Image 1 (tube, rainbow, N blue to C red):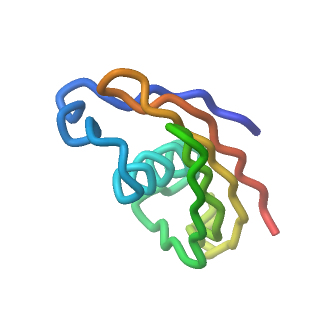
Image 2: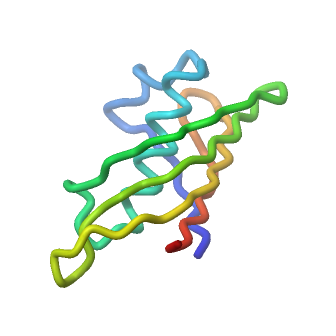
Length: 95
């Protein structure tokens, strides 16, 4: 599943610098948007790389499913700073 998301609004100033830390936050938000119970998300193994203004992040997220069982998924996210907002996509696949 791919999701295209633009992160900004009131938080736009926070995301304005385009560094690795804010790219990670943007990607985690895009991944959480695809989870059944996003409040249970536990991210690990994150690896990031930069190519100009584009950041790629991959890792693992564990979260509860509809039955309350913790499940692990791998994700890949690509974001690019556009003005003061992050735009990109995340692909989340259960293991």
